[in-house]
Amino acid sequence: MIYVADGALKHFTKIKKNVKNIIWAGDQDSLTKTSKKYLDKYSISNKNRISQDFYIKDILLEKNKNFSDFSVLLDMIFSNNSNSSIFIEVFFGLGGRRDHEMANILEAERFISKLPFGGICYFHGGIIISSVEFEIKKANKMNFSIFSKSNNSELEISNAIYSGHFSLERPSHGLSNQACGNTISVKPKSSIISFYF
Image 1 (cartoon, rainbow, N blue to C red):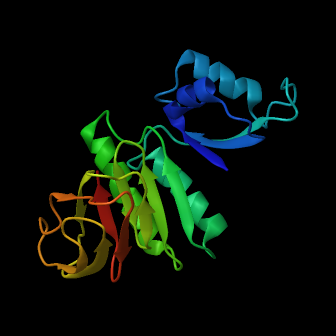
Image 2: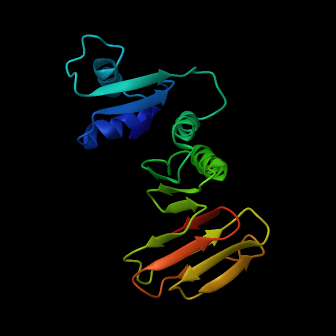
Protein backbone atom coordinates (compact mmCIF):
# COMPACT_ATOMS: atom_id res chain seq x y z
CA MET A 1 0.00 0.00 0.00
CA ILE A 2 1.22 3.51 -0.77
CA TYR A 3 0.47 6.35 1.64
CA VAL A 4 1.15 9.93 0.57
CA ALA A 5 1.38 12.96 2.86
CA ASP A 6 0.17 16.23 1.35
CA GLY A 7 2.71 17.81 -1.02
CA ALA A 8 4.54 14.52 -1.61
CA LEU A 9 1.77 13.81 -4.12
CA LYS A 10 3.79 15.79 -6.69
CA HIS A 11 6.55 13.19 -6.44
CA PHE A 12 4.10 10.31 -6.77
CA THR A 13 2.66 11.75 -9.99
CA LYS A 14 6.19 11.73 -11.47
CA ILE A 15 7.17 8.21 -10.41
CA LYS A 16 3.75 6.53 -10.65
CA LYS A 17 4.02 2.82 -10.24
CA ASN A 18 1.48 0.18 -11.13
CA VAL A 19 -0.74 0.60 -8.07
CA LYS A 20 -4.50 0.32 -7.82
CA ASN A 21 -4.93 3.02 -5.21
CA ILE A 22 -3.17 5.24 -2.74
CA ILE A 23 -4.16 6.84 0.53
CA TRP A 24 -3.47 10.56 0.72
CA ALA A 25 -3.76 12.73 3.83
CA GLY A 26 -3.06 16.43 4.08
CA ASP A 27 -4.30 19.94 4.58
CA GLN A 28 -3.31 20.96 1.03
CA ASP A 29 -0.91 23.65 2.25
CA SER A 30 1.95 22.19 0.19
CA LEU A 31 0.03 20.90 -2.85
CA THR A 32 1.00 22.33 -6.21
CA LYS A 33 -1.78 23.28 -8.65
CA THR A 34 -0.92 20.23 -10.73
CA SER A 35 -1.09 17.95 -7.68
CA LYS A 36 -4.43 19.46 -6.62
CA LYS A 37 -5.87 18.75 -10.08
CA TYR A 38 -4.50 15.22 -9.92
CA LEU A 39 -6.05 14.71 -6.47
CA ASP A 40 -9.43 16.03 -7.61
CA LYS A 41 -9.30 13.95 -10.80
CA TYR A 42 -8.66 10.61 -9.08
CA SER A 43 -10.35 11.15 -5.71
CA ILE A 44 -12.59 8.25 -4.70
CA SER A 45 -15.28 10.83 -3.95
CA ASN A 46 -15.21 11.99 -7.60
CA LYS A 47 -17.86 9.80 -9.25
CA ASN A 48 -16.77 11.09 -12.67
CA ARG A 49 -13.13 10.10 -12.31
CA ILE A 50 -11.55 8.91 -15.53
CA SER A 51 -10.11 5.64 -14.24
CA GLN A 52 -12.13 3.16 -12.23
CA ASP A 53 -9.00 1.03 -11.82
CA PHE A 54 -6.99 3.66 -9.95
CA TYR A 55 -8.25 5.97 -7.22
CA ILE A 56 -7.04 8.09 -4.34
CA LYS A 57 -8.65 7.76 -0.93
CA ASP A 58 -8.22 11.33 0.26
CA ILE A 59 -8.32 12.44 3.88
CA LEU A 60 -8.55 16.20 4.12
CA LEU A 61 -7.11 17.61 7.33
CA GLU A 62 -7.63 20.97 9.04
CA LYS A 63 -5.11 23.63 8.03
CA ASN A 64 -4.78 24.98 11.57
CA LYS A 65 -3.18 22.09 13.42
CA ASN A 66 0.01 21.49 15.37
CA PHE A 67 0.85 17.98 14.15
CA SER A 68 2.14 16.62 10.86
CA ASP A 69 0.23 15.03 7.99
CA PHE A 70 2.77 12.18 8.19
CA SER A 71 1.66 11.41 11.76
CA VAL A 72 -1.93 10.88 10.60
CA LEU A 73 -0.76 8.32 8.04
CA LEU A 74 1.35 6.51 10.65
CA ASP A 75 -1.66 6.27 12.97
CA MET A 76 -3.69 4.83 10.10
CA ILE A 77 -1.00 2.28 9.27
CA PHE A 78 -0.80 1.27 12.92
CA SER A 79 -4.54 0.79 13.28
CA ASN A 80 -4.62 -1.40 10.15
CA ASN A 81 -1.48 -3.47 10.83
CA SER A 82 -0.80 -3.70 14.56
CA ASN A 83 -0.81 -7.53 14.58
CA SER A 84 2.42 -7.99 12.65
CA SER A 85 5.92 -6.63 12.24
CA ILE A 86 5.91 -3.66 9.86
CA PHE A 87 8.38 -2.31 7.32
CA ILE A 88 7.80 1.23 6.06
CA GLU A 89 9.80 2.89 3.32
CA VAL A 90 9.65 6.69 3.46
CA PHE A 91 10.48 8.83 0.43
CA PHE A 92 11.00 12.61 0.75
CA GLY A 93 10.75 12.55 4.57
CA LEU A 94 14.18 14.12 5.09
CA GLY A 95 15.50 17.48 4.00
CA GLY A 96 13.57 20.68 3.69
CA ARG A 97 12.67 22.40 6.95
CA ARG A 98 14.69 21.00 9.84
CA ASP A 99 11.76 21.15 12.24
CA HIS A 100 9.60 19.11 9.84
CA GLU A 101 12.41 16.61 9.32
CA MET A 102 12.80 16.22 13.09
CA ALA A 103 9.03 15.83 13.48
CA ASN A 104 9.09 13.02 10.88
CA ILE A 105 11.91 11.21 12.68
CA LEU A 106 10.27 11.55 16.10
CA GLU A 107 6.89 10.41 14.75
CA ALA A 108 8.57 7.36 13.19
CA GLU A 109 10.26 6.55 16.53
CA ARG A 110 6.92 6.85 18.31
CA PHE A 111 5.26 4.64 15.69
CA ILE A 112 7.92 1.89 15.95
CA SER A 113 7.76 1.99 19.77
CA LYS A 114 4.02 1.23 19.69
CA LEU A 115 4.33 -1.89 17.51
CA PRO A 116 3.91 -5.04 19.63
CA PHE A 117 5.81 -7.13 17.04
CA GLY A 118 8.36 -4.46 16.18
CA GLY A 119 9.20 -2.85 12.89
CA ILE A 120 11.49 -0.81 10.68
CA CYS A 121 11.04 2.66 9.24
CA TYR A 122 13.54 3.33 6.45
CA PHE A 123 13.93 6.96 5.38
CA HIS A 124 15.53 7.32 1.94
CA GLY A 125 18.37 9.70 2.50
CA GLY A 126 20.03 7.70 5.23
CA ILE A 127 18.10 6.82 8.41
CA ILE A 128 16.71 3.51 9.63
CA ILE A 129 14.65 3.47 12.81
CA SER A 130 14.21 -0.06 14.09
CA SER A 131 13.23 -2.28 16.98
CA VAL A 132 14.03 -5.52 15.09
CA GLU A 133 17.11 -7.04 13.49
CA PHE A 134 18.03 -5.89 9.97
CA GLU A 135 20.81 -6.29 7.43
CA ILE A 136 22.31 -3.88 4.94
CA LYS A 137 23.81 -5.40 1.83
CA LYS A 138 26.50 -3.86 -0.41
CA ALA A 139 27.69 -2.01 2.67
CA ASN A 140 31.44 -2.39 2.13
CA LYS A 141 33.24 0.45 3.94
CA MET A 142 29.96 2.30 4.51
CA ASN A 143 30.20 4.75 7.41
CA PHE A 144 27.36 4.70 9.92
CA SER A 145 26.37 5.72 13.43
CA ILE A 146 23.78 4.25 15.76
CA PHE A 147 21.89 6.19 18.41
CA SER A 148 19.32 5.39 21.04
CA LYS A 149 17.38 7.64 23.40
CA SER A 150 17.30 4.88 26.02
CA ASN A 151 19.98 4.58 28.65
CA ASN A 152 22.19 1.49 28.20
CA SER A 153 20.48 0.37 25.01
CA GLU A 154 21.66 -3.15 24.14
CA LEU A 155 22.43 -4.18 20.56
CA GLU A 156 24.56 -6.52 18.47
CA ILE A 157 26.50 -5.50 15.36
CA SER A 158 28.18 -7.87 12.89
CA ASN A 159 30.77 -7.16 10.15
CA ALA A 160 31.77 -3.67 11.26
CA ILE A 161 34.88 -2.13 12.80
CA TYR A 162 33.05 -2.03 16.13
CA SER A 163 31.27 -5.40 16.16
CA GLY A 164 29.84 -7.48 18.94
CA HIS A 165 27.43 -6.93 21.80
CA PHE A 166 27.19 -3.29 22.91
CA SER A 167 25.51 -1.25 25.56
CA LEU A 168 25.10 2.35 24.33
CA GLU A 169 25.83 4.13 27.58
CA ARG A 170 25.80 7.67 26.23
CA PRO A 171 24.37 9.48 23.16
CA SER A 172 27.61 9.40 21.14
CA HIS A 173 28.61 5.83 21.99
CA GLY A 174 27.48 4.47 18.60
CA LEU A 175 29.22 7.19 16.58
CA SER A 176 31.54 6.68 13.58
CA ASN A 177 31.41 2.98 12.82
CA GLN A 178 32.24 1.43 9.44
CA ALA A 179 31.17 -1.74 7.63
CA CYS A 180 33.93 -4.29 7.06
CA GLY A 181 32.12 -6.80 4.91
CA ASN A 182 29.56 -6.72 2.16
CA THR A 183 26.68 -7.23 4.61
CA ILE A 184 26.31 -5.78 8.07
CA SER A 185 23.76 -6.94 10.60
CA VAL A 186 22.28 -4.88 13.41
CA LYS A 187 20.09 -6.34 16.14
CA PRO A 188 18.49 -4.08 18.76
CA LYS A 189 18.08 -6.05 21.98
CA SER A 190 16.28 -3.73 24.36
CA SER A 191 15.06 -0.55 22.68
CA ILE A 192 14.58 1.35 19.44
CA ILE A 193 17.71 2.45 17.61
CA SER A 194 18.30 5.07 14.95
CA PHE A 195 20.84 4.03 12.31
CA TYR A 196 22.33 6.94 10.32
CA PHE A 197 24.36 6.26 7.18
